[in-house]
Picture 1: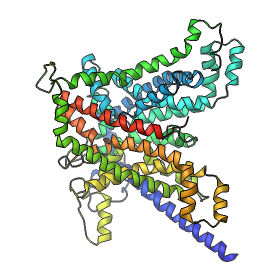
Picture 2 (picture 1 turned 180 degrees about the horizontal axis):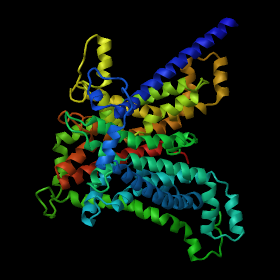
Picture 3 (picture 1 turned 120 degrees about the vertical axis):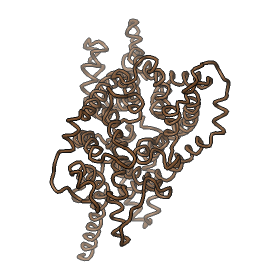
Picture 4 (picture 1 turned 90 degrees about the vertical axis):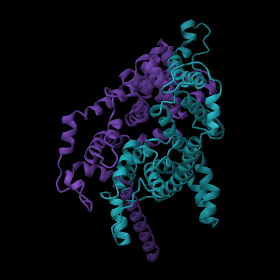
Length: 277
Length: 297
């Protein structure tokens, strides 16, 4: 009995060791990125590399704010925020119709989700030509609309799943009580799907926040997002490491904070609802 | 469903369900159908950086597709990345899910930390790994130097033998946790009583896995493979940050090729033909995949 106990202990210790090793592997690059942003230029370009900064200093961030580069995080916020709100409203009412009235049947639902699978490069090229013609290149309207459109299939698909989880009886009794259809949506469906709405909005926001290719093609100087700004510091052999790391951290830290509160919804959120979380 | 069976409903009420989907359909047609039509028109013209004449030139651009070595090589590179990264992510993710399936001290904290790479912007991941892989100031060459007993200055983003491993490491680092999360959720839902019954019958590990676990987690696994496969087909950000498709065009993916043709060399009409080719190729794959994979509901 005692030896069995001992073997179980050994197994647990081994598993724990493996778990720590794996976690360190996945965290180390993130540590390295954050750590470089706190180093002085001398420390960044020291050989052999220093594994931790001599002291935490924010000089690299100060430069980004002084030069105005940090404003690109603000652009990301505006673009991701506005497109998320739009996609959530338009997408949720569509999802409600698909879920409750089976509008368009399976075909419409499948067509909508298939829109998410088209490679962005094939979409952005004609959109770019259209925007040149409309004068929408490097405008908030242009970027927000494209982000809205691109996230719409995700919102519709996710919200359809969440709405199907709501019992029908509540909506029926609201109708009997004399609510209009719109009131049913506002006063029953939205509150009941609150958790799903919130989770879907967060993920839509993260997708838009992290997006790079559309922003690269459609922005020049006015609405440059932080992802595009990071690549401005790449330059052959003389990469501006301090700026790359500090700008990346400015864009990444908010996402980490948000995701820390979203653990419950994470799996369902990133799997197109294929796994119920 | 709920109330559509009300005979006295007025016009607005009867069309309520269409009113709700209309804005979405409109926006989706804008990015789903407009580009397709526009690409079709432009691809039969002969527009380039220097040529603005919009008269039709027949199938010249499409004929050129078949002779464009660089295009097919880009497709091949994309397939190579997919064929290596996807199985790696799947197997590592599955192994990690198995490791974290049972009780373990600090399990929620481990999982919360392991999730982080997934939510980092891919362009930032690429930038991070270019810092990691730097020949002189990066930690990777440093560690390799320790292990091999002498300073190493491997050119991870330039040396033709090392660029593929470098990109695949970055890609696998970012997306293995995605597989891990999905498969962990799937494994947790496997029927425990079946596993116990198999253990009592004395079934070995492989038999239990292939007969009970695998069929149970397959629906989730199929969706995970589909999502990652499609993502890998459009691979752009990580490669862009690490090599920009170089050295030469060695790591150029189909997305990078299209970007270069359209936005750096301004071969407008030819790029339209390439984009159409991509859409057609992908539609075939997606259509076949959706027939097999049932997304939830």
